[in-house]
Length: 276
Image 1: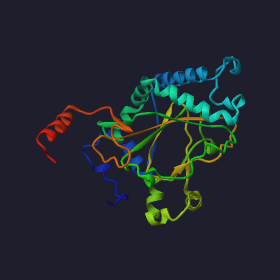
Image 2: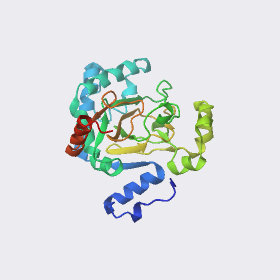
Image 3: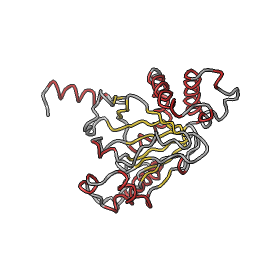
Image 4: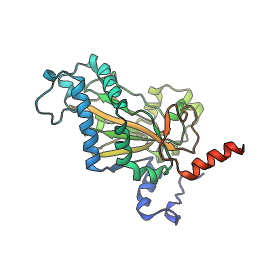
C-alpha cells in the first residue's frame, strides 16, 4: 500500500464533513478535536470528586479552581503512585465514566475507526508532577510489544498540556518515510531510538475540552515535566470489533460496545453452521 497516495478526496463514500479529519489522520497519524463542553465538565467534575475522596479535606485548598494543576503543592512525590492507583480504582467502579468519554468523541471514532467498536475495559490515568522522573514513559510504539496495529488511543487532558508537560509523537509522514525496520528497532534501546527520532518528535499542545486521537503504531512517550503545573491525562484504546486483536483479546482487555445486529447474527450462524 502506498501511504503517500491518499484516496479519500476521490472516494464518493466519504462524507465531506469527514474528509478533513480523515485526511489529517492519514497524514500525521493524529488529530486534536473539540469535544462537547457539557460532557467534558461532567467527566472533569467526576474526577474532582475522586480527588476529594482520596485526600483529607484539610490538605485541599478551599478554592478548587485549577486544583488538578496544583496538586504538587500538597502531594509529595513518594505518595503519587498510591494516590493515582486509588483514583484509578474509583474510576473502575464508575461505569458511567467510560460512557461519558465514549459519547464525547463517538462521532470522531465513527469517522476514523468505524461504528462497530471495542473499547478498553478500564480507563488509564497519568499524573505527572513538575520535575517528576518516576512517571516517564520512554519512547515506544504499542505494536512493538504485541498490540494490535488496528487500535487508536484517545488521550484526554484535564489540564492545559504543552511542551514537556505534554506527550510527544513522531508524525506518520515522517515515521513512514524513515522506513525503520523491526530488526533495527529490536537492536536499539529506547534511549537510542529517542535520539534517532528526537528532531522529528512533535510535542502536543492541547487544552481541557479537547481530545487527542492518535495511531498507537507511531513512536510516542513523554519526558520530565519541566513546566510549573501537574499533568493529568486520561487514555483509552478503541478498535474495530472485527479487526485482529493480537495479544489483547476481546473480553480480556477489550469489551464490545457497539456490535450491530447483522454482526451478532452473523457470529451466531457462523458458529451454528460451522462456517469458517
